[in-house]
Image (cartoon, rainbow, N blue to C red; front, top):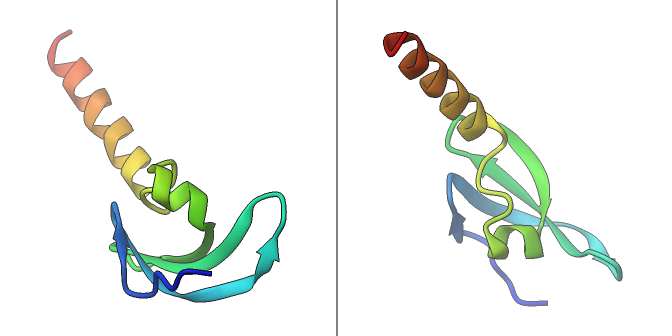
Length: 73
């Protein structure tokens, strides 16, 4: 296992390992989002860019898109 503690992936900072290796998905890590939310994520999802935030990025993007579409109406 490669230690990725302290590394950043998008809005996430890796805090520490969470569980032993899951042979199907790999290692899970405890991560903290810039918004303050802490959760677990698989290393593969972090490295591939599949997981970049706790979901706050998606919510912000949706709100921004809604605002922009209302301006164009």
